[in-house]
Length: 109
Image 1: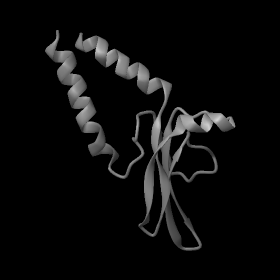
Image 2 (image 1 turned 135 degrees about the vertical axis):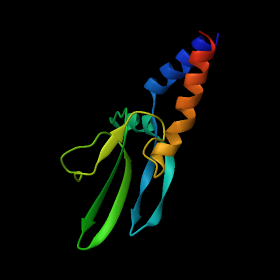
Image 3 (image 1 turned 60 degrees about the horizontal axis):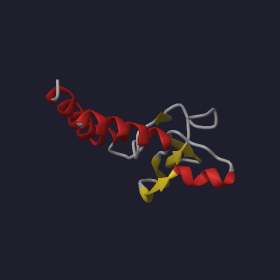
Image 4 (image 1 turned 90 degrees about the vertical axis):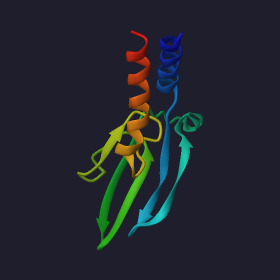
């Protein structure tokens, strides 16, 4: 039963993605949790989140958006396909879901 629930959660993850969206200028700013599937109404489809930073005219900005990295983003851009994975604390955010999935999978075998 647990494997079925886990499989259904993974199917749900592939159907829509939620990303952090916002901008920080010199460390000051905010992000909001955004359901990127809402943008399908205007012809945009996203299945990943991205994070990148830029320095323009000596001002450092950090961007959190829906979508894949592209040529317009700086070299430090990275993208991911898990809900809210583009937050500032991405590595620590991933520990809990990975640990829960490991416990569920190893506990039922």
